[in-house]
Amino acid sequence: MRGVAWPTMLAGVARRLSNSIGIDDAPFDRAHRGDVAIVGVAFTRARLDGVVTGKLRKDGANATSAIASLVEGSPFAAHAQVILLGGITFGGFNVADIHALHERLDTPVLVLARKRPRFAVIRETLHDKVPGGARKWRLIEKAGPMEPCAGVWVQRAGLSLDQAAQAITDLTVHGKLPEPVRVAHLVAGGYGDGISRGRA
Image 1: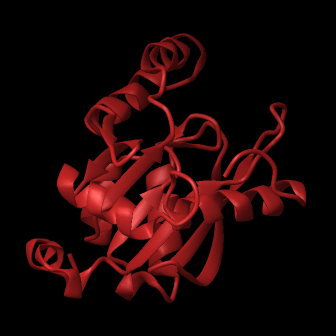
Image 2: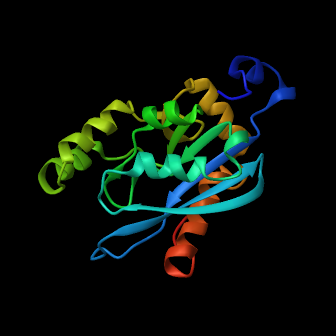
C-alpha cells in the first residue's frame, strides 16, 4: 500500500489509520434505466476533506472500473490508505470486484454492512432474474464470506480481519458505521433524491 506499512502502522498508537475514502451509490427509482450516481467522500480521521461524484450502469458490469476511476481521478487518491464501500453491489446488481479494485488502486478495500446479507436470496435473484447473474455471483463469492468485525459485517481485500477492526474503530464516531461510509450514504441520498433518507 502506498506509503503505509500496515504492521508498523497498527503496532503503535502513533501511526493510526488516517486517510480514507468512503463510497456509496445514490438512490434511484426501480423503473430507472441507465446510469446511477456514486459518491465518494474523503476523510482524514473523522474530518471530511472532500466529495467526488461519478456514475455507473444500473444492474451493469462496470462497478469496479467506475469506482477505480472515481478514486484515481480525485485529488485524494495519493493519500488514501483504505477504500470503504457501503456494500459490494451498486446501482442494483452492479457488483464490485474488490480484489481487482485493491490491485488496481494498490489500496486495501473494505466492504461494510450493518447486518449479514441474505446471500441465499441474493444468489437466487442473480441466477433467476439478472442478466449475467452467474458471473456477478462469482464476484461476490470471490470477495469471501461476510465476517463479523467490530460490530458490523465485512468483506475485505488487502487487509487482515484485525486490521479491518482497527480501521473501523479508528473511523467510527456515530453509530456502528465508519464516518466515510455513513457520510457517503447521506451525501448520496441528498444527491439522488434532494434529501437524505433512511438510516446512516
